[in-house]
Image (cartoon, rainbow, N blue to C red):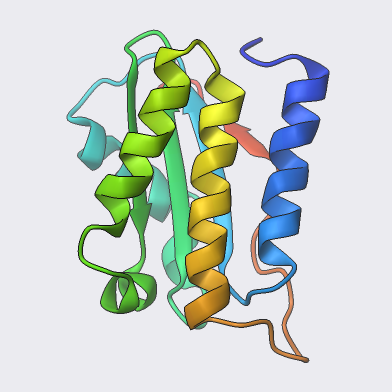
Length: 144
C-alpha cells in the first residue's frame, strides 16, 4: 500500500521515536485503505491485534487511519485514559483533522503523535530502565 512517500514514512517513524524518547508510553500508527466496521471498533480491534493492551503501564496510544474511507481514530489504553484531560482525545482529533482537510495526511498523523507524546511525557515520564515495548514503524494493514 503506497500511501506515503519514503520521506513521509521516515518523518512519521521519527516523530514516534522522538515522542517516545521522553516517555515510557508507546505510540503506534495503523493504516489501511478501507474500514469495514465502525471506526472506533476497528481501531480497538487493531489496538488488541498489535498487542498495545500488553504494555506494562497500559499507556499505549494508537492512531488508526482508513485512507480511502477518510476515517480515523486516536485511542489510548486504560492507563493514559485515566489521566489525560477529558477533552484531550477530541482536541487531538480536531487538530489532526485540520491537517487532513488541508491535504496533509502525514502532517496530521505527526500532529497526533506530538500531542499524544506530550501527554505521555507528562504522565508517564521516561524511566531509566525503560525499554521500547512496541515497534515504532507504521503498521500497514490489509483490511482482514
